Picture 1: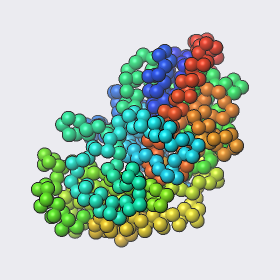
Picture 2 (picture 1 turned 90 degrees about the horizontal axis):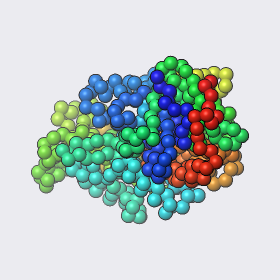
Picture 3 (picture 1 turned 120 degrees about the vertical axis):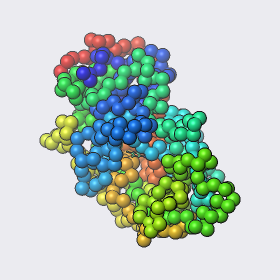
Picture 4 (picture 1 turned 135 degrees about the vertical axis):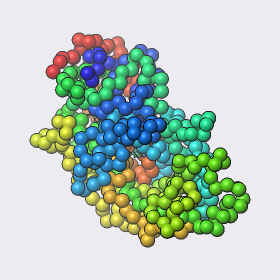
Length: 505
Ligand SMILES: Cc1cc2nc3c(=O)[nH]c(=O)nc-3n(C[C@H](O)[C@H](O)[C@H](O)COP(=O)(O)OP(=O)(O)OC[C@H]3O[C@@H](n4cnc5c(N)ncnc54)[C@H](O)[C@@H]3O)c2cc1C
């Protein structure tokens, strides 16, 4: 039985990834009595719910959890299924409690320059970003002891730092991870975001429960209709507020299925073209490093699982986000790869900001259904001439960065298939005014509705190149402030009861 235990809540959140969970946590902590339902179409993998699968110690259990997250259809990267879109071939989704947040790498850079949202003051956004970093347990020090990381950054800095302000220079990548006292790492899933709320009786988390549609009475949100994916039973749930946080492809799907179809719905879809390249640190650098530090590995002699992640921040002058990962082994066969020193092979990923166009979109048809019976998505997506130019510039930039670090392992950088970054954005984007080019306001409230919020990378209106989850969690923190105001101001007028607007359908 995957139906909620009650028929009315103050808040229903559809989708249990990092952004939906952030709404739950913020409302739970700041409203003393609010009852909250968090529902997800996918299965609950762990106890507590939403734990990152990398923290599951047994490899078989971990693989099973990844497979269980894929849902129906062809598998993508572990924990995801491919959407099957010819124009966005690598587009993938996770369907499980925790969403992609149970599978992610956890890179949490702050956006900068043109990635910032012009109509939200920087100082205010920084406060929300700080709160998002707390919610996700972000630190830049998880791999301070990684061998060669300082050398990699020293080389990148010499090339890329001149002219940059101090906070946008080459740095360790902020990561959503906690270093335990034994030195091992615990990766942040949504268990971390939910914190104590998940164990409180005011919060209910229901898995295998599909949000079928949001229900409105005129412009006022009154609840959701859900389906138990185990029994097929459907039920109406009353709510004073609803947050749809069902990822960038399925949040617009649920709005479409609910008859909420503003002109910008599904449009401005953008993903970050991703270019990869690999180099190897020169032998003399490795030898010199060994001579100075007396070590090439972790101080305890252990081979650490990931030998360091560095960050080249996006800037208007260098409009790419660089994620530089030192690897434990070579990603391509080497003649002498029997003893590759961990950390000496360096993978560079350069992410580009896509040219935003309303023509790039996910649209839905009422005549065809997806595997869950919701309107089937169809993606329209292309690279503009400017995108193709950006991609060429990024290839040059990553080649130069690779050359400053070491010896190339590839002939040239490779552009991954569109959708590979898994950072789909813009499909319910926010705007300063309701002029037809946005779906929600800057507090993530859907235009022309009352009590309805959207969350996820889909609300980001700018062309970002950096990993977007920190930004979308920060925007959820901002949206939660408005949602709390809504709950406080509507409390007297419409306290939910088991009778209010509820019917078994
Ligand atoms: C391998 C991998 C690595 C990544 N690395 C990074 C990284 O380093 N940094 C970064 O910023 N991002 C990264 N990402 C992306 C990141 O995980 C996402 O940006 C983030 O999880 C989005 O959060 P979300 O809450 O918007 O949605 P999601 O985490 O996608 O969760 C959405 C949830 O909604 C549920 N849902 C959908 N439709 C319905 C419905 N109708 N009813 C009920 N439930 C529904 C889904 O089951 C899903 O659980 C990575 C992703 C993957 C898979």
